[in-house]
Each structure stands twice: as structure tokens, then as C-alpha cells.
Image 1 (tube, rainbow, N blue to C red):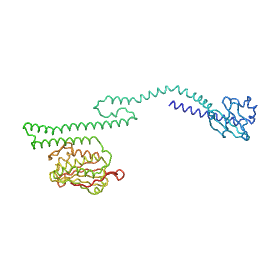
Image 2 (image 1 turned 180 degrees about the vertical axis):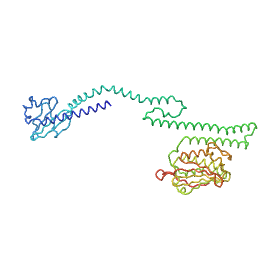
Image 3 (image 1 turned 90 degrees about the vertical axis):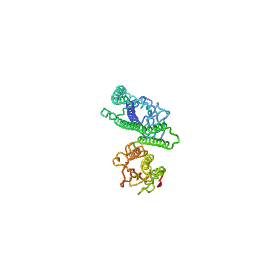
Image 4 (image 1 turned 45 degrees about the vertical axis):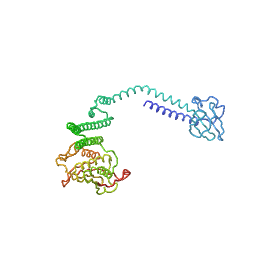
Amino acid sequence: MSIVAGYGIFRAAREEANELFDYELRSVAVSLPQSVAADELANRQSADFEGLQDDHIVIQVWDASGHPTYQSASGGILLRQRTGFESFEFAGHRYRVYGLRQASRFVQILQPMSVHDELALKLASRTLWPLIGILPLEIALVLVVVKRALRPVNALSNSLAERSLETLSPIDPSKVIPVEIRPLVDALNDLLNRLDSALHAQRVFVADAAHELRTPLTALKLQIQVAQRDHARLDDGDLLRKLEDRVNRAIHLVQQLLTLAREDAELKARPGAANLHRVATQVVSDLSVLAEHKQIDLGLECFGAAATEDAAIVMGDETSLITMVTNLVDNAIRYTPAGGRVDVRLHAREADVALEVVDNGRGIPPADLNRVMDRFYRAGNTTGLGSGLGLAIAEKVAAKHAAYLVVQNREDMQGLKVCVRGLRLVPPGPTTRGVRPAQQTAA
């Protein structure tokens, strides 16, 4: 700040010096007597010219016809300029000139700019010396103020440095925190809360994985031990089928756990556009083999605007939506008896799309409906392979897309209906370009 102030003072002093010298040049030109062109007058000492040599002023005079009639002894050959004030450069020096046209002559008064700068420097130095004198005091005052202002920041830094790795509690808002860093503290608290939630989810995942994997792996180990004790042969079809079932259950559980962990890692769906018609078509096509193995009629139905191409494009992550629909359809196929029916239905409305997966299986006991979306929970009437994670994964994906899952028995009590509602449609425009429509498929 002192440097800036010093520069400003010098500029102001220079402007004042320029004004003062401009006034002097004009005064000399106006007061110059008509007889100054005489050599004897110009070369003698006179009160009219007293002090002009000290200011390095050069006087030039031309007659009415433009012939030079006088030039002061201290001046060189300088070109004639226009009327009024001008600045120009001659022979490596900068000059300030004032030209005055009179009835019988043209008078030109010049002065080097170095004289202006010298006077400006003298004027500025008289003001700068006190400023330079108080500069150390200013520096000391700034250091004291900054040190005092940063004291809460240093205390906050020390408090964070002393925390253990397991401590993710937010910073106490009751502490004295400067207003300037309050947004930083709020953002840091939000980050700590999200990290704590992520680590908690990770710990829960590890605990659940260890607990759930223990059962199929223990059963597999017991099956092998029984086979060894009974000296079962390796070509025993029943033994191999049981071992394969145990391994398949462990593989399915691991896949579901990894899928759940991936979905838990993201609080919101990644921005994008997904053609829900294409997603449903792909899932139905991929799971048609499983449905045919159980002789289940699996199909896709579209109602209303969903039957139109590009009418079921929703905002969200297509990969996550495929995971959601796959789990819903896979669940329906697993718990529907052989020879049953599973329908995937799309209903496109004005602003959103509803997706339904309807089967004619056993349904869910009313007492279990409120818990079927809990992780690892399986209804009392379920049989066969399963991990209890399918609906939990689907519910997680729906929540990420600002949608919700509704699980209910069919009105005729002949199966289950799972509905995903609130998937928002993408407004028509550039965001929908490049999203290919899917064809209606039935298996």
C-alpha cells in the first residue's frame, strides 16, 4: 500500500509540476516584449529574462511571413510546432512547448521535460519521507493484526491435526470461528458427515458380507466333509448337484453384495439420460433363458405414451437402472413357480414413468411386506436360492433417482406387484439426442 501511495503521490506531484511549468511557459510567451527580436536586447542581462536560464527555457520567434527572427542563445535548432501546448521529442530529449500566434509574429517557448520530472521528484520526496518513516510501524501493525486474526484458524488447524483417524465428528459450531471461514467450516463438516456415512456403510457391508458368506461356505464345507466321511464317489450326481447349488448360492451372494456396495458408494445418480424402454427390453432378453428354464412366460408390455419411440427416456444412470430392473425381474422369476407368468410393464405419463414387475407367484405374507426391502431379509414363505438383497438394491437405485419402490400383493392374491414410481422424463430437446429407442420384446 505504501508503494502504491508513493506512486500516486509522485504522479500527483508531476501533474502539479506540469501545470506550474505550463503556466510559466504561457506567461513568458504572453509577456515577451515586441523588441525581443533585437540581438542587443536578447543578449544582455535584463529583469525580463531573470531566472529563465535556470529553468532551461528556450525562446523562439518567427515573423508574420514565417522567417525566424530570434532564438535564445541556450537553444538549438528546434522545429516550429502548432499553436497551444504540445509535447514532442527532439535529439533524444523530450520537450514541452507552447506556441502563441500574435499579429506580427509567432512565439514558441520550450522547456525540457527533465526539468518537470526533477521538480516533481523534489515535491514528492518532501511528502514521501514521512510516509517512509511510518512504513515500519505499518508493517508491525499488519503483522500483529494478521496474527491475531489467524489465531482461531490456527486453533482449528491444531484441533484437526490432533484428531485420530477414527474421529469424523463435525467441528463444534459453538467455537469462535471467524465469519470469513464459516463457509469453509460448514463445507468441511458436510464432508466429514459424508465420510462418516460412507465408512459406516463400508463397516456394515463388511460385517454383513462376513455374516452372510459364513452360512453358504460353512454348508459347502460340511457337505464336503460328509462326502469324505462317507467315501462318496466323485461321479455321484446328487453330491455334485448339492455342491454346485452351494457354490451358486455363494456366487450369487457375492455378486449381490458387490452390487449393493457399488450403489451405496453413490448418494445420487450420475447425470445422464436412459431409455427405460431399451433397459427393460435388454433385461427381458438377458433373463429369458432363466425364464424358459422354469417354463415361465416373461414379457414386456407398454401402455400409453410408453409405446411410442423415445417416450420413456428418463433422467439417470442407465447402468444403475439396468441393475434395478434386473433384480426386480430376477426376483420375480426365482419366486414364481414353474409354468407361471412374469410381466414387465411401462406406463409413461406427462412428467414421469412407472415401471411394474408383476408375477403370479406366492406373493408375500402381509406381515412381511414392510420388511421385504430390508437387507438380507427374506419372507417366511420363500424357498430356494436367494440372498434377501434384490429388493434392497432396487430400492437403493430408485432412491438415487428420486423415485420410490412400492411392493404389494396383487388384488386377486395371485402373486406380487412391485412398482417403481417417480422416474422423471427427460424434456424433449438436445439431451435426448443419441438415445436409441428399444423395440418391444416378449419371451
